[in-house]
Structure formats: structure tokens, C-alpha cells
Length: 606
Ligand code: F6R
Image (cartoon, rainbow, N blue to C red):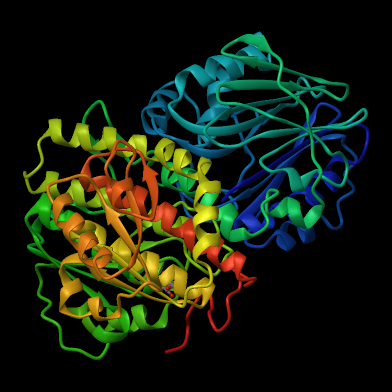
């Protein structure tokens, strides 16, 4: 996702900022840019594509300013282009801003600003912020930023530079990370520590609603207008540790990012007040006409597809089928002009999924891709694309991208149900309320990860695992088993719990751990019956259940508790401990969990 770096000091600011941008490249981006002040002039350079394009544009220009801000952009509003790249400026060209996040009410603000004579040069939501500051710049940049922040809704990390006040950089955060780097006669502001770690190891992490004013000599932090003090953290990581944010593996870092990935994916896509779900890129008129749905994907993305089948059928009443890409590419599936095709792929490059779509696209009524990698093949081939905003995933096993696929698919299921008149405003409002709670709940699960680590260590020497779920949690059992297989090389299978007696029960003995997803709902007693049947055969039970469940400890050898939530939303939480369990077992076995053998992040061969 986007990266931010700002510098103010005595050194060549452009060099410091370009260095910082290089360190932020791992986050993924599709354009970059830099603004700096020289004298009272604001200079700005931007380039689509790789950072080298920006570097070569600057090659023959001698820049000597000592205050600059820079950005790597990962497109959300508006395609990757020079014009949409940050920094953006106001009409006077003296105020420049960079922004990570999404301004939810940008459209209304843009209309208001257009009426007041502002001219825009990009398609982004971010640009409006420079113009909002311009409205009050007479009061000084700090006051103008404060006034502008009051007008916007959404998530942001904002960094602002005003050519009229080159002795300071202003920054503000809500939802998107920002960290100050405190040096000697120089200071930094960035979205991530690696971008300044070479120059200082002193960091101050800003909190939500903080606004910082940064000068050469120091900084002040205000929260909701009141001065606050934030603790200085002494970073002990080296450069490569820092890219993993101090985590030992990308996979653990990315599981840690699941709450943010979920939040980033849903933000800006609904309006709670009006109980409306908004997908900018989706054609609602075409969607409304669809009478059945086919979802196609591979691997973990297929598990997201399967979860959606349960949800979408329940809420929209449509007939939803799910297919594995490699199967459907050679089949003759029933697809008609009232079939909605949904293709799910993190990479957007999975050859089986692409071929499956090619096999049916001419017969489909309307097609939507749910993709993480901007500009990838699948993001271009279908009628519409909905991006998951998980940011780049480096660990080979899909974790945070799975959670953000579910985020899109939950919203899309509710959206279709509402277009079909099957979900009232009241129900939409209540579903949105539950979705908004998910990031906080996932954080609570991750906080308890040491307990899961212990369980992982206890069972890391077992050779086979079975995972069970019922109904909407069955695909999560598949996901738990796949993840364990991939990164621990332990044989694991996922089953619908009711299917146990039709085969898998033959495997039960005192050596096979059986992992149950056991929400406390109408089917809870059925799950307990399955557990009893295994216990009667000396089987080992690991259960994932509600925090308020006081009885499970009587049945299971180990229990992983997750927050209580309405049963339809259970998969969004239950997947997280299963990702963690697989991770800790893999690590305990000494496996390179970020690059497990024989697997590739993007499967572009058949
Ligand atoms: C599992 C995993 C793979 C992918 C599969 C599809 O952890 O990473 O199973 O989910 O290869 O990839 P995408 O989603 O890129 O189409």
C-alpha cells in the first residue's frame, strides 16, 4: 500500500526522501512523487510506474532544498498515472500534501470546492485536502490543516508542506500509521520505520487523531487540539528486521496486519447513515438483473468463494455455485446471460482462474473480479474489478489477503441482497455494525497469540490433522487444513463435521489432532456430538469457540477462544487462530514459513 516519507533538516532533503521511498518499495505501489521547498518555491516531481522512473526524471536536476515530502502510491481512486500520483497541490501551487487512506466524503467536498472555484487536476480523493487547506491558509498552515481535518471523514495519514512556511511539516493520522523519526537537527515523518532507520533509531508512533508539527529542531504533537506527549521508542531492529516491522517472518507480520487489511478494504465502501453499500466500480443496474451466481477461484481464494456461497444464498436468495479454476476451465458449466461471474484472486495472475474465466466469459451476464494486485491480468479482463486493499503480501501463504477477500465478499453479498430487496435498511445497518467490529475483534485474537503458540508447540510432531466445521465455517476448516499443509508439511484435511462418520472417522486414534470450529449456535450440539464420537475413540480435540462458552473445556484437550459474534460473521474471526496455529507449528518445525518448498506466490503455470 502507499508509503510516506517527509524530511526536514540541514541535509539534501531530496536524497533523504528518495532513500526513504526505496525502503518503502516493499509495500507495493504504482507511482511515486516528491515535493520540496527551495527558497519560497514549491517544486514537485511525479512519475507513474517504478521509483526508478522518478529517480531518472530527477537525474539532471540539482535539488538543494532541505525540506521535502515523498510518496509511493498504490492506486485506489483513479488509475495509476502521473496526474494521480502524490504529492497533490492546491490552486496556488504552494500547498502540497500526501495522503494514505481514503476520504469517504471526498465527492461532496469536491462538489462544494468546485462551486467555490477550485480547479482539480487529478481523479483522486486526496487532492481535495490541499484545496481544503487553501480555504484557510491565511490563518497559517497548522490552523488550516486543523480546519480541513474537521471536514473530512475516513482514514488518513496526511503530510503537508506549505511553501510559505518552509520551516515546518504538518502531519495527521487517523487509522493509517505514521511515525516520527527523531534525529539531531533533522526529523522525519514516515508511514514505516525502515525509511529513516539509517539516520535515526528514535521513533515516536503517532496515535489516532494526533496532529504533529515537525521542525528541524523538534516536534509537537496535538490530539484533538490539545498538546500531548508521546513516548519515544528506541528501535533495536536492523534494516531487514525493520522491513518485517520487528516480526521474525512476513507471515506473522501479515497475520498481524489482518485487522488493518480488513479495515482498509471496507472503508469508503459503505455509508452507515444511509445504510448503503457503495462499490464505485460496480454497475448496480446490471447486477440487479442477475439471477444466479458462479464464483471461481483457486486455493485460499476458493475458500473465500465457498464461504460466500453460504452467505450470499442466505441473504440474497440467489443460487450460488463455486468452482475451482482448474476444474471449470475444461468443463461445460451452465452459464447464461443472467449469470453473475465472480472471480477471486489475490495475485490476479493465476492461470487456472484466468483460463476458467476465458472458458465462460462470452456466455456470462456480468463479471466482477475481486483482486488484490492492481493492474494484474484479472483486474483488467472482467467487466468490473473490486480491489481488496490488503497491501502487498510477501509471505507465500495467503493470510491477510484472505481476510480482505472476505471483507469484499461480505459487503458484496449484502449489497446484492439489498438490490434484490431482500435486506432492509435496518438489516444492512446491523450487518455494517457487525463488520465494523471485526478489526477490533481480530486484534483481540492476535493479542492472545502466545496461547496458540503453546498449542502449536504441543502438536507440532503429529503427522496428520483433521479440521471440521459446519455450514459457513466448513470452508474455514478447509482453509485451516490448507494453511497447515503448506507451511508445516503436515498432512491435513478439512471436512464438513457431519461428514465425519462417512469416512474420516476411520482415521481417528490417539495420534491425530481434530480441530473443530465450534460456534455456539443452533448446530453447537451437533458439533459436540461429533466431538464425543472422537473422544470415544481416544482422539485429540482442539476447539475454536466463543469466549463465553464455559463448557467446551470439558470436551476438548485445548480450546482457542474468540470473541462472541453473530454466527454469520464467525468465519471472519475463526480463520485468524487457524492461520496462527499453522504459522506456529511451521516455525516450531523449523520450516521457512515465508517460502515453503514447491509453492509460488503467483501460480502462472498450469
Ligand atoms: C494458499 C495460497 C494459494 C493461493 C492460490 C490462488 O495460502 O496462497 O492456495 O490462494 O494459489 O492464488 P490467487 O488468489 O493469487 O489466485
